[in-house]
Length: 264
Image (cartoon, rainbow, N blue to C red; front, side, top):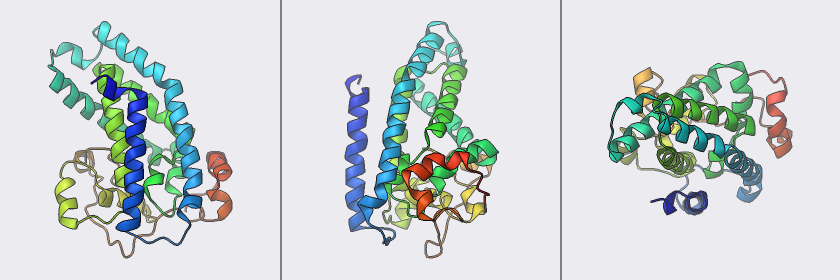
């Protein structure tokens, strides 16, 4: 188990899945975009590398807090003597709940949106969009992850398992693949599916401000932010005013949180 949860092993899993989904996007695409796939992917890949570096640089904070809380009996789980399977179940659910709150606030707060619009300015969503994330947003998400660890007293090995599941699902839900509607409806009873998450990338703000869940779809249902379906013939990705080439380069994306563009 420990070998499967190493940083290197998790990175390999993410790369392998990304390659498989990249191939499937060529075979069963949801949309046939008019762009060069490799050229389009380059800024996203660069941001992904920054995300990995930022996460690795701050991973000591998660390791320290998880160890400290468990050793000192801090957090809700300290009052419950849970078997391993329950620690996994409730730990993953707790981390996913806090990820939902972090995501909602990225949309609802002015500062959060300045950073998160880097992700939403993508006008051709595919598997490389999964980690198109400004380093400032990465730090924000890590802060909420740390808050969940302290609140619940989640062991480090459960945190690492959650991060692996979250990363794999992020790639899947952003992939530009056509999914059978019946299969999608069945899966989204439990987890966020590609079709469910595509709604969140709509240019229509009413749809953008819905379907925030990360892994488990129940949070959107529970908190009233769930949009059940969308007409893919009319779905338009991206943000108005952000399609110009200069704002889609790596330099433009890194500068985006610090430029006062209006949300339109």
